[in-house]
Image 1 (cartoon, helix red, strand yellow):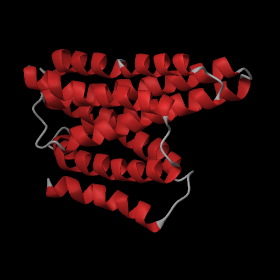
Image 2 (spheres, one colour; image 1 turned 120 degrees about the horizontal axis):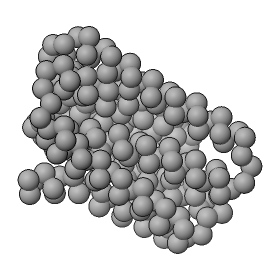
Image 3 (cartoon, helix red, strand yellow; image 1 turned 180 degrees about the vertical axis):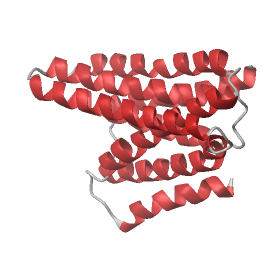
Image 4 (cartoon, one colour; image 1 turned 120 degrees about the vertical axis):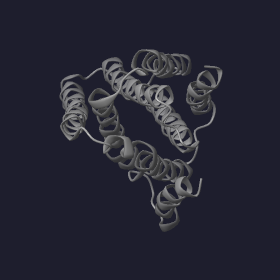
Length: 232
């Protein structure tokens, strides 16, 4: 349990540090995009190496149902937040919707890591490193966005630290409540979490990364991140 406790706290600690950094000095666009590409490569490779084998170990129906539900949930959240943002005009409400969306992302990440730790699925530090970078830059980006929307430094910091704590809450909950899963229920749960995580990488992390100035060496970092997992 001690090792599991530390594993879950690593992304949490990095997220809080990222929130503080964003309020003090925001990293440049190129550096941010570079790390986002690298993190995306890490996440996708870690999922392929450590979680996809569990998804395809049998129980095909459970895998399909879990995966479809994961994608459906994220698309539903996306549609809800987009439609709500179009209807609201004040900064406070827009910031609240952003915090809600990011909070859901962190809950999904927490469930995935807690489940992986509880089931002993971690074969290397790859998934931990990948989730740590993904969560850290998600929180950093959120803090920066809240500041740009007119939130005070204190309110931005408190808001992002608050939602960052959702990650360990859901990670430990998954660790204790889902560690006994097996068979179809385990495959379905892993598939659900993997689908949601891949959505976050492709539809949020990489989309945001490409909104900034791009370069060939930055794109290459995605493939470097992918390769690093298999080297590990």
